[in-house]
Length: 171
Image (cartoon, rainbow, N blue to C red):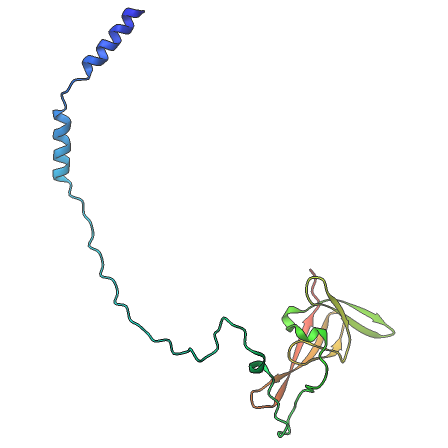
């Protein structure tokens, strides 16, 4: 067994000679024939400076101050106007698209709607009550929907009515 092992080692050592000329010739010819193609770098675009001209305007990343969002009322005009002296209810702090009708209750022919305003709050509302950001007043409650009349400012001090409907939705 030792003789076989010793013969294998001698065979491997004889195979490892210093003859690398054919390998070196292959490498040099390959390098000479193949030239790497590197594309030219595109010229960088010219930078144009634009001065910031909106430093006196409100930043779009900061909510508007209260005096910018106050509702304009022109009492000199004889047109439709909301009662701004009326005390606002809890549901008037939510936009209508953030409120959901979840059901109804009825007693003695009167129907109330159940309105969800957030994860843990449900309110019972009826005809004549207010909700929404635009002085919305409930004018009709059925088992399937609630009709709301909102007062939308037209920008000139007058207001226009807009009818909205809130449909019964399930979770």
